[in-house]
Length: 158
Image (cartoon, rainbow, N blue to C red; front, side, top):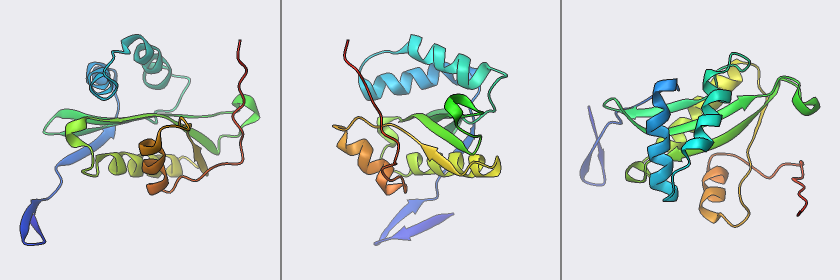
C-alpha cells in the first residue's frame, strides 16, 4: 500500500514495535553509539540486567524493527513502591533512534507503544529526565505530550 503526499509516493511504514529481549543488546548499544559517538556497553549491560532480564520488573522496554533490523528502542521501568511511589507511575529511562531513521516517526511509534503498554498495566503517569541544555530532546518530549512535572530533581556537588 502506498500513500500520496504532495505529489510524491510515500511507502506505508514497515516499522514493527515489539518487546525488547536480551538478543537486542548489541543493536541497542550500536544505536546509542551512533547517536552519542561513544560506546556505553557497560551502561547498557546494567540496564538490560534491570529492565530486560530481571524477574523483579514487568517488561516495559521495546524496540522498533524494520525488516528484522532494530532501528530504535525505548527502555522504562514500572515502579512498585520504590521511593514511596505507587505502581501507578513509571519512568521512561532511555530512548534511542538510529540517526538514519530519525524524523520518520519511529520515536513517536515507540513512545505510543510504550504508553499504551503502561496504560494497560494501570499506570497513570510516566516521567522522564532531560538535560536542561538538550533542546532537541526537550522538543521531542514536548511534541509527545510530556510537560514539566511538579517533581524537583535535586543534586549536590561533591
